Image (cartoon, rainbow, N blue to C red; front, top):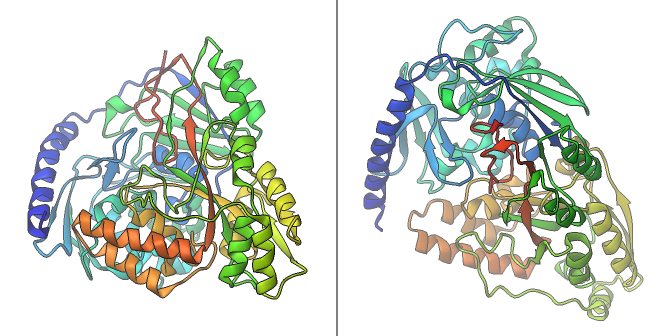
Length: 542
């Protein structure tokens, strides 16, 4: 489809969406929320409650889809974009200007620490995005923060300006065409903050409270957080989609041990749990009070190489480490039937996936020869970081790290296993302290750029590009893919990028997994989210 036709179709789509959205807006009234409590056994403590600062599912489940909304949003259980705080949007013929028409009558939450004096409007959108674009704004000086997702995707360079056209219209002007822009605007970092609340915090000298005492327009109101124990939310009676709030109390029972989460679910101490271990899946399926829906995971578990640390800057060393790993044994032992071997930097369900991408075979003897060729015949010492949490893409990082450690020992590579609490793990990895680390990704928006650009682009080096790999031939293709509208052309570009990835091997793909969501049969309409978080809007309890 030619660009103008595509943009015209986008405008037609938003007009249709606007008609449906306006009916939702017209029905806003204070909701009578059912007096029901849902307890979610989560796997870890969030690093904070400001979605713009974080990149993990633990954080997003605890903040993004409870407290906040975005201008556009992903539908529950899918990747289709629908209207959010914007009822509709228009795209200019040249594809560089997006005009968002904001929803009227949306209220920010009233909490123990903030009572809004006005409804949501364009000022809130301006504050949210100016904060990510302008490090010199007063709020950023009072509370300096990094916005890894925003910068990983190059949005800080892409967005030329954000303007308030009128109280309910906001215009974004881009420096160039950006094919995934609307998909990106539905992502967690784009959650809308209250400018009025931020201003009150600034005046009180408490700007950092934005990250600890959140205020949004979302379905649940934050009440309290006890680190490593509980997060408590109340249903929002003023939510602009009143029919989506079906529980009066939402409690996160933070339970790092997966076995303990299972026992709590069985005893009905929680009604939903995160990330079951593969070994628990079959027994859970036999429980008459528990449902076990599943679907192929939109994810990838991988081993990152910090190419800024010698000798990992050499391709042959990375290849040797990859070939020394018995990935089949890892799939069998760690994933226990719920994983598929990975070869690409994205899952097979992502459009543009190159099914013919070559990969290295398990070959310890050839790995030894490669190390000898690189002048490392006697091996070397290295750190291997193991995640402290379970994830669908890696249900047991400790076991995986021990298996890799044993495999590397056979070629003379002496690996020391390192781990930290999850927030510290990510923070230190962003700082580049690791040599190699186990990590992974669940797609955020259904676009190939969310894998190749976010995990491997030069702009993502201080964010989710944990290997600090910046390779211009690859990065040029990523930039070209973002400015190309036609999906067929983009597929060709991303196929080339995957081939460069296979040649350079900045990380070793390990596995894609099947995602299971254990849930009490009391729970109504809990959906598996393909993008990797949990959502409780629209969820009820019998």
